[in-house]
Amino acid sequence: MSTRRYAFGRVDEATHPDSMRATLAEFVSTLIFVFAGEGSILALDNIYRDSGSSAGELVTIALAHAFALFAAVAASMHVSGGHVNPAVTFGALLGGRISVLRAVYYWIAQILGAIVAALLLRLVTAGMRPAAFHAGPGVTAIHGLIFEIVMTFGLMYTVYATAIDPKRGTNGALAPLAIGLIVGANILVAGPFDGGCMNPARAFGPALVGWRWRNHWIYWVGPLIGSGLAALIYEYIVIPIEPPHAHQPLAPEDY
Image (cartoon, rainbow, N blue to C red; front, side, top):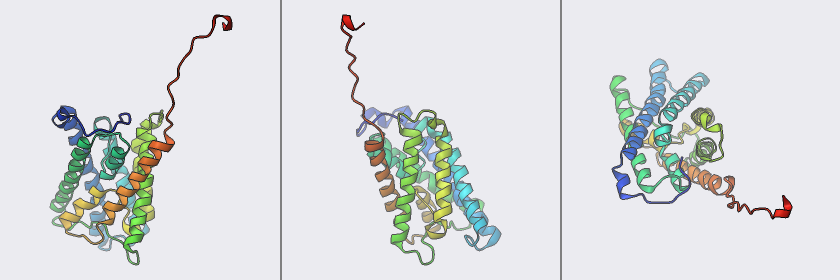
């Protein structure tokens, strides 16, 4: 990940091969993640016809998302940074780690990847309608919003600690695993309440293809707020800004 630098992006960046490769990587990785995550829900729907009613189903969905995100981030981290999530891209933008132009490219690629994944699922599952996200029984939109803010804060904080922090050291090799695990853990917590989304693209693709929009706004507002807060806190408080060291030569008598 690049050092902090706020910029709109150069003109040549719009057509540079690196930008194209990174955008393609985000598209493919988001497609992989959404296909496996949403697909696990549809698979359980097909098996049990009553999704989300048991702890075993929740664990299966959480593991599917964790494994898929682990693979998706690992596959694209060296090309695009492995965002796979518009909220993560938004946090990186607020932290000055990505240009506005590249962020827009990533957002388009991530949303398109999620839509294509949902369309493929509808095709290969004989027309099963994507489940999409919605607040559970007795869970208000405000409760769901708070869930999404807190969970995405944890996700973005983990991304910063393992993938962005210049002093991350060997933690960088663990970034895909850590990111996948925090998402899986958050789904175990929030799955019965609001589904545990943390990713606007993950919410939008299935919602569009399945045409399910109930409480959809919380899966955009919550993750963007949570990721933005985590990025600003980590960027400006956790990452130290060290003054340059001016090495003065010792006086001859001090040798």
